[in-house]
Length: 67
Image 1 (cartoon, one colour):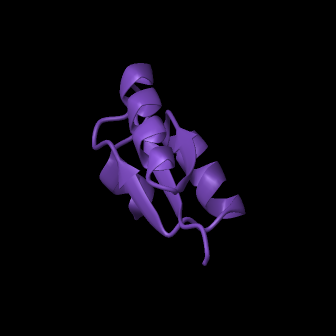
Image 2 (cartoon, rainbow, N blue to C red):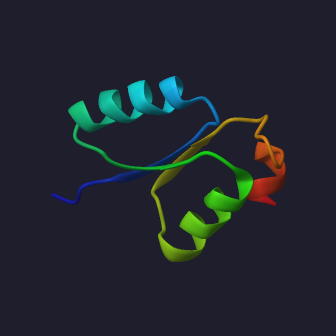
């Protein structure tokens, strides 16, 4: 069975850490990013199955990152 990949994007370190740990416990492979720039880099190199993106990032809007 394929391990599904989740991209979790949030500028809050605690939120990222807790979310990553919870998803890993459920069997997901988790990539994280803290800014819009990091998110674009991850999306260019990897193709996550799903992305959970904070709407307010320090350098961008989560909606703009998807556009």
